Image 1 (cartoon, helix red, strand yellow):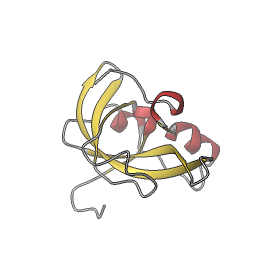
Image 2 (cartoon, rainbow, N blue to C red):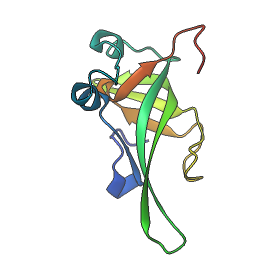
Image 3 (spheres, rainbow, N blue to C red):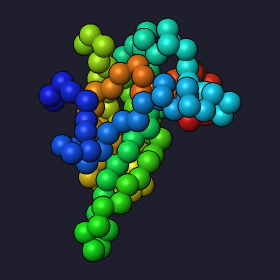
Image 4 (tube, rainbow, N blue to C red):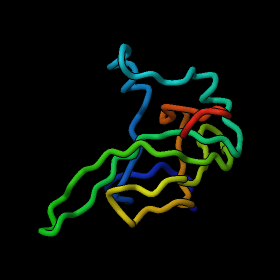
Length: 117
């Protein structure tokens, strides 16, 4: 797996920046503390926002946004590696187990033991 962030142009999807959304909507959008997001360990579940482009029956682009869980598998510098833990509603092109890279700024939730997913 190439060590890079996905882009709409190359991959048909990309991750939204949770920090930017949190700063724009501080009253309604909570993001875990930066220290927590920078200390993730393999095996932890984190929620990321995926922006996915698909084509409809007339080959027109449709953009979808889905919040999905990812299992952290490792870290290299500022990049975390992970595997998708959900099946997106909008496409079968992505599936659980799909490898990806992300940064702390993409994390919008960290699953805690005992919490419902």
